[in-house]
Length: 322
Ligand SMILES: O=C(O)C1CCN(c2ccc(-c3cc(CO)ccc3Cl)cn2)CC1
Image (cartoon, rainbow, N blue to C red):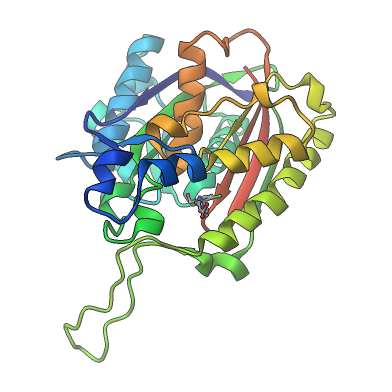
């Protein structure tokens, strides 16, 4: 059997930080941030960690699907900001919701994490599992250097996820996941280096660091081609896709990608204005909002493209019918 998305949910922390709020603590402005990125505000966790955001999503999925947690075979969390290296954030979610039968582990693929995790999740269904949850969740605010205006203005916290269930019909029509570790150091976070000879000297670099130019150019150059290749694998034309759900990193990148794949711009919903870049959470939050707005209808057989791109470097596209 194949994996089918049967429920969606998202959760963002309550506190909203606007561009104007940031301009009181950084040499930046609402004008610069909104024109260069499309971001106007972001949600920032206060006394909540990544597992807390993911637990809220998991609870919403169980509630909306009216299923008991013991029915779940797996809990996967895509995150680059786990609460701990161990226990995994997925394991914390599994314990908190009482999914006593579920295996649980995190997937580290930065902003491609959700499409990577969805693909991995389906492997469990293809080999006999029946039901599980796949969540993208981040508290990027805990690793952002709030003195660095080139990155501090870009990121936000949040989580989104789906319930994936076994179905006799194929719903993930094509996958195309890529990685290029040669360029990996263009976006780094939570660097833990070996201690020098038994010194307690702090070798670690917790902050997210990014070569914005490198990543921007990578996104515009490599991702459109990945989308077109995946559509070929699915034997679908661009026109047959109802909605393109791309990682919400930057408005200008979305504009460029729509032009490069020659698809109508109106098929590329965006919400980075409200949430900033939430890395692995951005695609599931966007999907959940599109369902909430009735623009994506579960069970309608609509064709979606889900595309992530970012740290690793990683990038990847799934063509999915819902
Ligand atoms: O000067 C300008 O206009 C700047 C130029 C640099 N910008 C960038 C650069 C890279 C990203 C980015 C980040 C990730 C990490 O999740 C993934 C994917 C992308 Cl494309 C976002 N913004 C902001 C505006």
